[in-house]
Length: 126
Figure: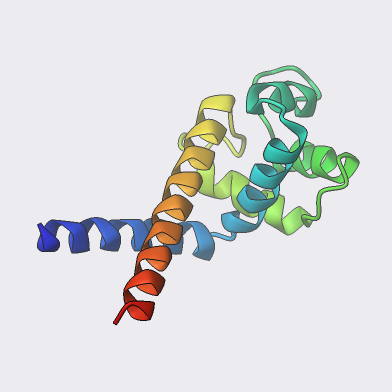
């Protein structure tokens, strides 16, 4: 019931806080908007970004690609994203790590937006 919903919302808030405090939210937001606008798949973008075709992205490769796509991130933003997503301490990310991170970001954003909408509706109907 209500207690479970509050626990779920706390988990979502913690995820967003982790993403945000890691600085990864900037790149996720820009990347998510680009994917929506261009209707390209993340795997296609990853393949274009992976300049040496090793299946891994360094922060330099990520920054270079985002710059070529004219997406507004800094080198520090790219480094933060790689550090946040890198699960095996390789200083690079693979497509699975990137997909999981973007999925986590989108899920957290959708829950946050849904909560805000419900709060607005309940506030205006009181």
